[in-house]
Image (tube, rainbow over all chains, first blue to last red):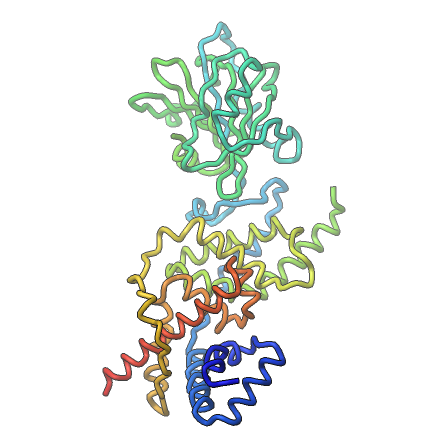
Length: 256
Length: 177
């Protein structure tokens, strides 16, 4: 083996990555060639120098505690967390988002839209309601629903740059057929349900949970530890329902 | 459904493996983000993701390599755009092999402190290669799996990193003279 070849193999030799036979050849050359040997030693010295001065950060104890706590959080359906969003709370929770479309209809009695959509999402998380169409294309999912539901379909009110669609299926909220979408955000499952519900069917909420915007009115409600946000579009007679266990401001931030 | 005892045994097993590698995770996370809060979040997210996919981990294989892969992928998907990249390196400058500067005695400590800074300034892929090799002691093969590239690329990244670091160190030494 000549000096040029040894130079090519130098780092692999130094890193202990050469196969035995080649390794032996390189070593033999180094024993016989003072120049190459000197070069190799210089490289080795620099290598050691670098290795000795690399700083290895240690994980803070608080981080270890947090991780252990999260792993041991008992809620069975919380298997993914978005900690970045929940950083102020330093607690993890599963997130549910349910989007419903509110259309004009003849019904007047309150419809338990928050409760039934939260129940549906919880059931999906524990294995019920497998997806009937798998796609990340919302339009394809909407086409799939055509003819299957009687109400006019609209895109779920979730910002597509923030969430990813996994698929969809038909479900029933109480006795009403609904279009059910499952989205994903950083490993979290998000449910979006389009259902035919009239504006005045929305159960009453406290005044402080109502937000007036230029194009829509937003109502928020809590059910079984989940926050739900109803976004009612003015004029168009349509709206959406967002439900989650994260703070309502974060839920609202997900909507387009 | 799994028996409750099995579930908790699996969790214990996972937790033990995880805590044993948390320093490596935090180190890489911090070196990539340079933000302690982001590093914390990244480690937590990676931990949970790994736990979620723990049934996919082959027992007996390298857990550290597996979880650092997860962490690095999360970094690339979520945090990479936040980090300001150091000035672009002109790789053609490095065609010629640079000799290692000789550092002796007291000079070692002085220049030694700069090594981490020099590494921090490397482009992300080269820096990752340096950390995985020098701090975590992975082989080329393991590094290739973690960085999802061919072994040849691992070798060339290490090569580039070493040339840049030697160049930087030489410049520092010459400044002092």
